[in-house]
Length: 102
Image 1 (cartoon, rainbow, N blue to C red):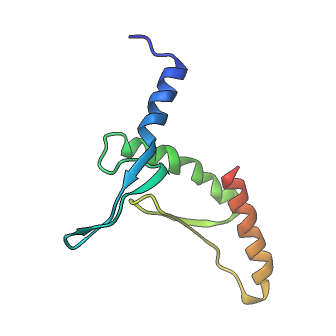
Image 2 (tube, rainbow, N blue to C red; image 1 turned 135 degrees about the vertical axis):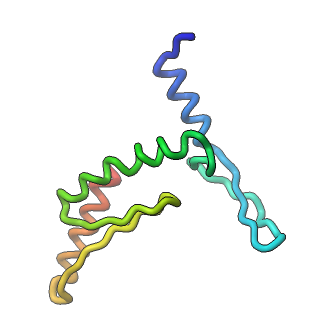
Image 3 (cartoon, rainbow, N blue to C red; image 1 turned 120 degrees about the vertical axis):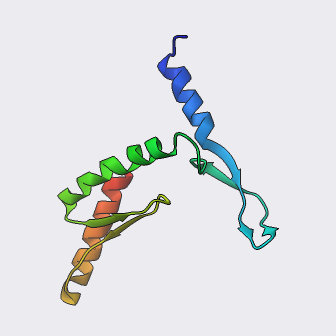
């Protein structure tokens, strides 16, 4: 079978988009909630997609921002600085977030 870029891209998009999830607490479930994009937990693609997400974050060293990456896909960015430099460092962190978003 020959895959075109469009077919593969559409398959991945359909796999990740328009998913429903709910939360279980004790023996009760929340109402279902819609998520625009989500990787199903426990899926065979989860490790690969996690690497695709986190590898570009190694470029953050260019911005002199530290990071922690967690197995549940949470990324924590942080700076250490003196209180006198608060506004300058908050601005730096906001610029870093803007670069990540781009």
